[in-house]
Amino acid sequence: MSQVSTPAAEPKKKGSAGKTFLSVIFFILILACAYILAKCMSMGAMNSIAAGQEVLGKYADLLGGGIADFLSGALGFWCAFSSVVLWFGLWIVTTKRIATAIRGLGVACSIAALAQIAGGLLALLLICVFSVESDLSAYKDALPSLFVNTCGDTVIFALSSMLIAAFGIFVCKLRKLPKKNQAKPAESAPMSEPEKTPEPAVVSAAAPQPETPNITNIDIDVAEPAMQPDVLSEELAGICHMCGTKNDTSVKFCGSCGAKLG
Image (tube, rainbow, N blue to C red; front, side):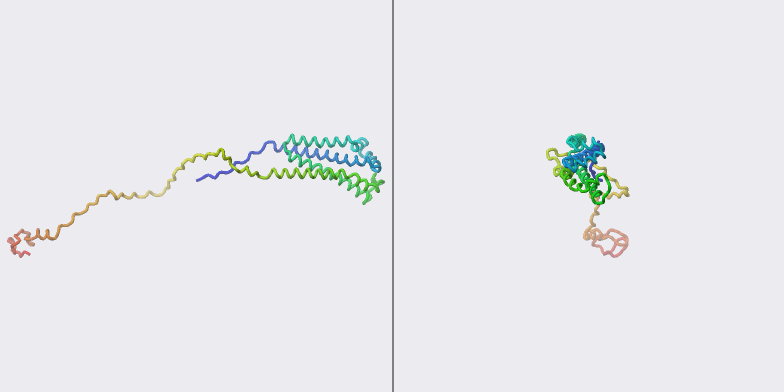
């Protein structure tokens, strides 16, 4: 029976679980730094508007004067931007997954920017539409224009991040496509087929058949043909049919018993 050859299983790559864990960690760190970056952009734009400076005072009471000043200044912006670049570079160096790192960077920054915009819309909806009492209720009339003037940079940041994420996703999908040259065997060094060992003959357990004699070498005794009638009649002429005495052929009666001959 012929054996059916099955393709060998591909060996599992070592360290894939560790690289995946590091990818998740770096994604979370980039997400946090990107959110701080989006917050810095929004509060930095707010610092240049008169109504925004008054709102920053309320933020300072909530977050603390030092944190509010840090987020609204240029130092906070560059620190957050440098942190995003740092985690992105470490992602590539550690895991060797460039396409995955680009996709993770774009997705993390998109989520952070959209979360900052969604937070501003939610605050605007609660204060201006549902009239929820808060420290910002005194600036109810100025909040819509303040949001429009400060969310421009964050929207640009979100759109740019989406483009980066789309490019990363495209590269990841492109790498998963099968290569055309992968299935072609090497023509320069053809592989020699292994020698096939002769299979043992299968002897059936049926009853042995009787041997047929070889009739080609059998000597067949052919009987000699009988004597001719003329020769036989000549030998029997003159013999008496009664007593068997031999008489002359010219005699008509047996000389011994007298029987008539012929």
